[in-house]
Length: 164
Image 1 (cartoon, rainbow, N blue to C red):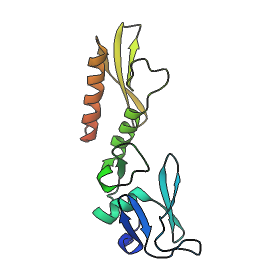
Image 2: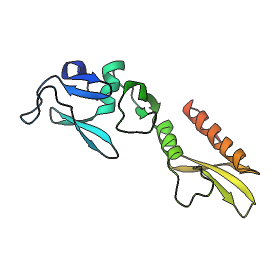
Image 3: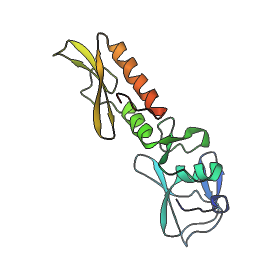
Image 4: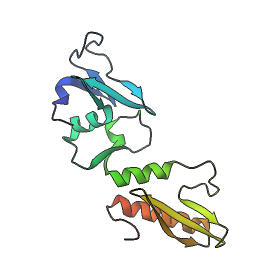
C-alpha cells in the first residue's frame, strides 16, 4: 500500500471505517466506507484504487505493513476489522492458519491435515507449505497426530519450517 494518511480520510469506530472526506458523488461524509465482498472482506475504493479495510485499519494504528507480511483476522471472521482481532503474520503463517480452519467433507479425523492411513494402520499428519505437502509422521493415536500438526503450525508461526 502507498503511504496515505488514513486518519485524515477515515474515522475508526470499533472495526468500521467512517468517511471523513467525500470520496465521490454517491458517498457522503459520515457513512460507512466500502462494501462487503469475498467471504466478508470489506473493500474500499479511494482515489481510483481498491483497498482492503483490514489493512487500512492496521496501517491507521500501526503504520505501514512490512513487505512480505499480511494482516490476519484472529477469529477467522473476515468482516470483523476491530484492531484487537487483527495481527501481523507471514504469508506462510496465514496460509497455514487457513488450512487449520478448513476441514474437507471427507475428513474423518475432524481435524485438517490428519487422516487415517489404512496401509500403515496408523494416523498420519500432513501440512502444506509453499504448495508442497509435507508428511509429519505416522502416529498410533489420532490425538498424537493432531498434536504433531499443532506443533508444526506453532513452529511455522515462529518462522521455522517443519521438516527442514
